[in-house]
Length: 291
Length: 321
Image (cartoon, rainbow over all chains, first blue to last red):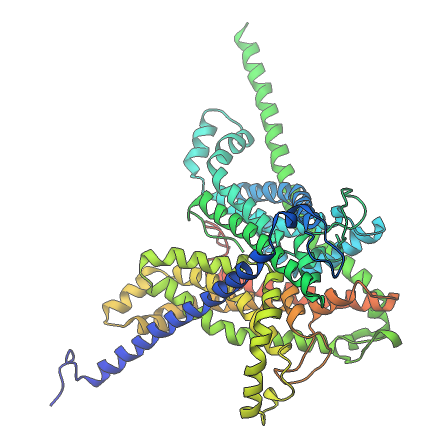
């Protein structure tokens, strides 16, 4: 006697459903396991960092070893200067290159550029640092904020380029055709119509590129260096930054410096998370994130 | 004003417009070409800076296992070993979790849950490397010590679990790396799964398949190349990851099989030794390691991108080549 296919006693069906149940369990457990480290890292950074954050953390220079207090003001300002310089170097190249890829990049050259940009975004950041060291730091005779900005700027180029391309491509063809039909030239069409429509998305790309490089320490370790003092000259002398300072403090044997590292980490993570959320908000899920 | 003159004027204006369009096209092309210039310059500069060791040690450099700056003896084998070991360990941990999460986010989760959870996974990628390193030193490593001790007692007969449980070492590095490459493998495989045509699933469900049966056959077969691409992309990230690994791997040039042993990777030796490098040969040896790393990264990323483009993701809509 055969069991009907739909009967709960059909062993084959039971086995199939059990396998499917395992898939569900596995997928849910895996997702939880993927989110667990995020929760743990954010929790520890908040818990440890909050206790070392005070007004003087934002306004004072680091104190010598052994003295409590002091702040990371120079590293905070240094990070802003470095990211600003990086944006000056990386964003124009990324944005204009992205427009080229979207408007003219369907041929073989466009393919090659797109491919190279994707490969460049996978080059380890420390290698970019070594490259800038050989190309800029050694000829200039020492580390400087400009060299660090170059290294971070180079890292921004592929991200900004591919995001801009993606978003400019999303602008409907009919908008371009409308503008061209009114007699506008191609470049006026792009400048006034296409970019207007793609604005929100391009802002997302810019914010993501900034968020990505703001936390990088490897490329600026030997290009911008670090210092315990103020340095407002961008063309010579070391420029401190939060990521490098966190790295150096964490590796030191002093408890005070460890606390400063946690404080710096909290500030850095807060900045990067705000940028990421803002980037998300600017397009509200209309785009996928280019890596 | 005669008709002829007006026609002539608008003709001239058209000519100008053409010029501005040409400037637009060639101008933006110059900026786009910058990425190719950068890659070529990168290869050139690194090779030029690594010339002394390239000439001195030749092809043996990657497999020589001495690293002795005092006696000018250099070889990259311990660092190559550490990089490969830690990256493969990271893949071993991260791939099952990432694929599970990607399947959940693309196939199983209720629609209202998909976007928020995907965003949280993206945030995991946004946390800077030094912050993972900081967390690794002060939270993960102390927590690993008792675990390593226990594993050493139970499974100490295996070469994987031998040696004193320092906490700092290969296991910590593999775990941190796994956390850091989770988001990219998850996000890219999720996109690959989402790119599988709906009809593939519908057809399987129509034949009475369960979720698992639809996934295993029709969906995975379609997505396979892309998922392999995502994993290779993750491998590329793991090989080049610097700060977090440097902070937890113990930085000792060994080629031990043990998970508990401190080790060294190519990026971390660059981060640690460059500041104190003395002598041309030492600097050149570090530059050659950077060159090796660059070569491997380019190769791996090129393969990953080609695989991803072959399933139609990674390349923007409308570009199929």
